[in-house]
Image (cartoon, rainbow, N blue to C red; front, side):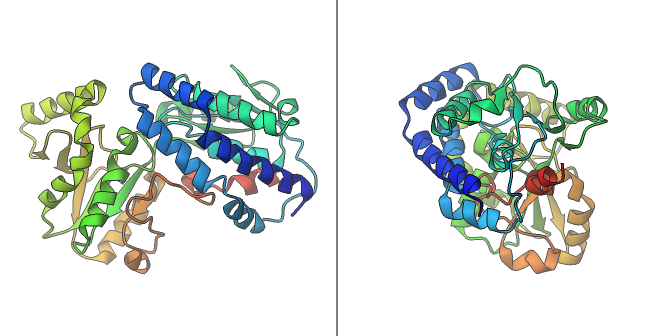
Length: 342
């Protein structure tokens, strides 16, 4: 591996230590949680830990990059990164990819998450003193050659038009699903609760839809959601719950509910915050067809690895959807390959 990339890996490993043990970052965590109630301190810490353990580990970085024929020299194309703000530090992987290849970059933050990344960025700038010469946090992109932008379905249409003449990776809303077979252990279902409830369900890797066998007792899930019972006392989350529950009751829509979530049989994938959809399948052949038809709307599929050959899709283990690895590129688009092609 080229010396400049080895040096960056060294800086990234050191960054992981600083992120996990920083009084300055902890102060910003507290402030962020005050400004944005959906970014609780526990959820912010979970995001920091996932980045440090899955993306800033030396062995994992080396294994990831060994699969690529990386250029000997830093790339010249300036890359604009527009980060989303649905969960804490959600745009870090985009930044990491551009940093590794050495492209100049401009980073535009979401107003919902504009405190955490600058602190992390400053930490890395102190480790890699050359970084400030090629990377900036900006209010508006300018003089850029390519774009990586993440947003809502509405902003996607804007991005598509605005960046129509630039090489780009554009992302819009996606959701994740889980496949249950009925053979799950209590530990599996408790882990599934993390896939559903972490970050209040705002992440594209959050499970918003379950596929269950025809005779599956959906009420079996409720006891495993108890560790998120604290959400009952979260005002903003419960505003969503109360609104959606009212709509269901007014329309006499069949559903099941406990104090923090409603479960509704529904063919759609994207469920509102505080709701979980489910759909029954009769066999794996029809399930495979359904999942592939919905592929453009699905970020990842959670479930047992034993069914991977039956549905012809990679499966994310229960409880791991919010711990993406370096190769878990959003929307399946390889960012390093994109950057190498600029």
